[in-house]
Image (cartoon, rainbow, N blue to C red):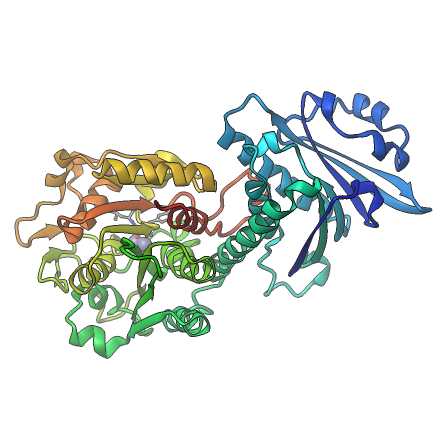
Amino acid sequence: MNITLQLSAQSCTDIAAQAYVVFCEHPLEHAPLESLKKIYPPLEAVIAQRTFTGKAGSSCVVTGVRDGQPAYVMLIGVGSLKDAEHERVEQFRRAVGTMIRAAEPLSITRLAVCAPSLELVGKDPWVLGKEFASTVYLAAYHFNGFITDKARCFDRDYDITLCIPEQHRGGVELGIEYGTRVGRAVNQSRQWCDLPALNLTPTDLANQAQRIAQAHDLKITVFDKAKIYQEKMGGIIGVSRGSSQEPRLVIMEYKSDAPKAPTLALVGKGITFDSGGLSIKPAVSMETMKDDMAGAAAVISTMEAIAHLKPKVNVIAAAPICENMINGEATRPGDILTFYDGTTAEVKNTDAEGRLVLADAMAYVKKHYKIDHMITVATLTGSCAAALGPFFAGLMTQDESMKNRMLAAGRISGDRLWPLPLHDDYRRAIRCDVADLCNIGSDRYKAGAITAGFFLKHFAGDLSYVHLDIAGTAFNVPDIAYYRPGATGFGVRLLVDLLSTWE
Ligand code: BES
Ligand code: ZN
Ligand code: ZN
């Protein structure tokens, strides 16, 4: 997939292309349709016939003629200006997704696009460029590598010209640069999630992190199995013990030039396959468990994007990576693990493994770095997915100002968050008679997403701490045109926007 995005101050119909795209607001009154009538004279009649009014999610595609050749006209609805600004931007993203989805079966790769009014995206040309570019990348992503019938593959190179007034060129160009970095990082994260566990082992993912660090001169530390045992990281040891794949702990560092920049730690769950261990999952729940490293993929990909974008914060990304499998060595329910910081936990359920590996990574980062805020990103609980479904990830924190920053980043990025109460009342759910903590919450407290959050919070201690449960949003999100079945790369857009807008 190769995407070329160019800007032009010409009217879109003056550009040679296979398709002419106009984003239309609802109601249609102001849509710039005049020049399209040269390509397709009965345009207004067709619009009336199909009752196309520019509503969000709608589109109207016809074939006309330009210079004696067939040329498509695509009208894509972006909804009403009356919606809240972040909702309008999201409708614009979905409209960009609809544009690519419409282009795919028609084999259209050269498009001339008439930009929507700046009103739609909050009057900022930079936002227009950012959202257009990042979403073209997201929408054009396909996980095709294992499909041999090329007719089924939409792996295309796009050549897209975005037509904008000359005075906006500078802003849109910078936005496109940013959006391109973000879009590529999201797709990299999706690619790793979509790869079967057979093709992306813990060692493979750690090697990918190493490759990125080398390419961008980021400092990186990778602990192998021997080092993890030597450091007594009992959580990672306990979870990986039943697998023939060696575990890894990856730590990447980005340092900003800005004086007095704060330091954020991003810790991502990297279970390359979660069978549940001896507390084995039912077959259907296991089908998607190659995606259980989506948190690690998000934080590692975020590091690549920010290596280019250079935000004014220091960032430590940590990813404990291993498989949760079963053999004669596998951790048993009732076993007690001792983590890097000396805390002990009884493993009542081997399927609650994400918190066990995150605990060691959090404790290590807390001990060895001066951190201002710590954020965990994890496909942690089915409970969160059941509570919030596929469109919002669970946000848990006791730091009000971080909560507001995160919610704002969620709204501007499109990776949306919804708060769950990380209230101290839930803490007692993970009390244990035989160890410091229990790795599952007591039945009486329900709220599995929150009790998991409390388990993690123990290892952040007194740090400002945010937990994101992305179990519902990391893969198989329906109805959003710029996604496909499979991984979403959730978290990358969010974290890159959070870090880039930090003040
Ligand atoms: N990886 C799963 C959580 C998950 C479920 C992610 C569905 C994505 C989609 C996690 O390791 C897990 O199995 N959690 C258990 C915890 C329980 C045993 C306390 C769960 O949610 O059922
Ligand atoms: Zn599990
Ligand atoms: Zn898991």
